[in-house]
Length: 324
Image (tube, rainbow, N blue to C red; front, side):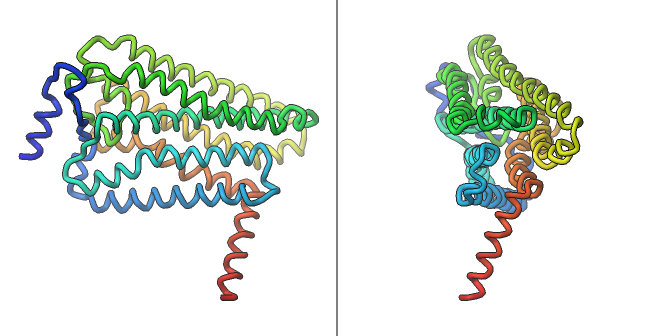
């Protein structure tokens, strides 16, 4: 009876947006049999994300030798990972423990805002990191002149404020649009899922959101250009060929993973993809699982300074515990 009621209310036309008080998330409909398994896996993933990101953040903050632009930007990347996943995992874990998966109108927009800003902030931060690597490798003698502490603060401010502002504009134009339905076939809220229920023509909103996506493709082109210059510089010297895999390969792996998973989600959101619900969910949450877990691990394993600092802290804690 409950399922029939949800299907009816989620597809029932409404005259205006004020009558849509709740959105119904149907993304978990195929997981009811193994909800406990999905809950356990999601909880372990979220705890792992918190642990690895906090470890890297605390290590960078406490180690004075890591107070350099590259590590500061990496710290910002980890903070963004915690921020984005905080808008997804707590609600997912709650839904996996509930018989009915619903989210309030305001809660849906809040979740969409957090996830979208996190994605865009990731792109901005990766762009800033590529610029830092470009100056460090291609203009080493001018590095400390160009990348000053003031420049670092400005780049950090840009990487956070720009995504927050752009996403706020995009969502503010979506908020209040008359809706004729409340069913979302995903496990989290996003703009395409909301706009599919618009009672009025939404060509402008769709074009605006696609324009925002295109605008954030431009930094990717800048990243590609930066690394083309870096590769050209590195192949000219033995020292550069050694430095490239240590500092740039982790960054390139991070960028490739993030761009791939976000591209899949965007194509799926704006186009009707013929696939099972579980497959769509798996593709949709990749950018909320893979980058937050792998970013700290990739950098922590490949960058010697961070690896040594983490091991040193772990050994210090072991010695303290043995003395007790």
